[in-house]
Every structure is written in C-alpha cells, then in structure tokens.
Length: 338
Image (cartoon, rainbow, N blue to C red):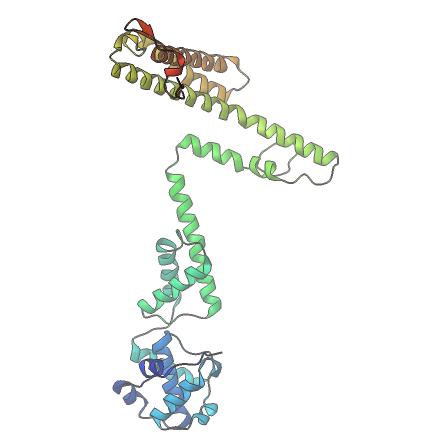
C-alpha cells in the first residue's frame, strides 16, 4: 500500500518536466494518465509499479491535474499487455535504462560477490546494494524472485572467493591436516563421516550403537590431541627462550652482564634445546606412540627451563654492595610495609 505524500514531495518528484510533457503529448485519456504515472514512478524508484496499489491517491490526483485527465479514468488503464510493454520500452529509452539481461545479472552478482558480500552477509543489505547498483548502471531491477537468485548467487560466490583466499595463504602441511579432519574415512564401520562430523554428532538414546559411536569419538580425539600437545610444547620452549632473553636484558640494564645466561658459551645449549624440541614435535605429531619424540621434547623443555630458572634466580636474588635482595624486592612482588 502506497504511503500518503506531502505537497513538497509531490512537487519535487511528481512534476512533469518539459521533455516529459513532449513524450506524453501524443496520448489521450487513461493512456495519457497511466503513461505519465509510469514515467514519474520509474524516474523516482528506478522500476515500474506492480499495480495500482503502489500509487498513492495524492500522486494520481497531482499527475491527473497536470495532464488534464480525471483521476477516475486510471481504472481503464491496462497494467499488462502489448500496449503497456510498448509504454515501458518508450520510458526506458527516454531515461537511458535497459532491461536486466542474463549477462547483466551475472555482472551484478560478480560485483556484489567482490565488493559487498564478502564483508556483508545479510541478504537484505546485499539486496539494497544490488538495487543501488542497478540504478547506478541504469539497469531496470529484475523481478523479486530473480533478485533473490542474484543475491544468493553473490553470497555463494563471495563465500567461495573468501575460502580460496584463505586456503591460498595456508601452508601445505596445514591444508593437508585440515582436509584430513573433514575427509570421509575408510574405516571399517563405513559410516561415511569425517572426524569433525563424528565428534559433533549427537549420541542419542543409550544403546550399543550409541556406545560404539562415543567410542569412535574418543578414538578420533586420541588420534589428534598428541599432535596438538607436541606443537604446544614446542611453542612453550620458544616462549621460555624469549623470557630468558628478556631476563638477560634486565640484568644488563642492572650492570650485571656477567650473570646473564645467553652468551657464547651457552649457544650450544640453546641450539640443542631448539633442535631437540623441533625434531621431537615433528616426531611426536606424526608418531605419537614413539617415545623418542617425547624424550626430545622433554630434553628441549629441560634445557629451556634451566636457562629460564638461571636468569630469574640471578635477577631476583643477586649479591651486590655487601647485601642480597630479598624475595620481597623481586620484580612483580607487592610492596612490604615497614
């Protein structure tokens, strides 16, 4: 239902201009009034009205007075048929618009996918951008169902483009591990589900089948958690070395370079810690039941832990000027009241 319009809005958007009056001049009666309303509605909204219900009574009266036709004669105008199609073609040609072809729809969907739908996933907002783009490109918006298809196509294309962009930035090993999570396994039960689908599935009522399903989830989890733990331990080794370097920097600022741990004589220990932890993480991730990988990770952690403990104890408790700093004066300790 059309909303009522104020006089200022009627004058601004529904006044026939000189070139528009020349276009209407050869028509009479209901055809003259209907054509004028189609022309001004298309100029205002970039599309044709779907019927009489989209035209407010004030609009019909205002345009009818300009063309000298009683408003009641609009009821004799045919909204469908060859005459109406000819009128629409005249209006499109006059305003420089064109109907939305298949090629235009493909271009609009591609533009939405690249410029809008990757950041905006709400269909109503994408639809608004589509209508605005149609008006900019002087393309008549298609029917509502076709607009919905263009919006869905744009959202699908944007999702594919975003997925390909993310996948191209992943390392080959990471991509293979992600694919292994979703690929359908060749296990004996033949349930046709990947690891993620199996873990996320709802067990249902208690039965032998649901118990076997939950056991399968635990087995799937058991295949993946050792790799995550191995890489987490490697990250812990690297963070420990970074913390040791930070403590050595604090000691140098305190004019105590002789108490630092990271110097030339300890370089072999640093190299050994990083190498052992890296090799151990790779072995533990690929062969979690092999003890060598976990032993190498333990060696890297022990060397890093020794360096971190060395630096922290030297910085927090060191002899200077005939006295020792008590633990209350260590960094991060709360002040002690006298």
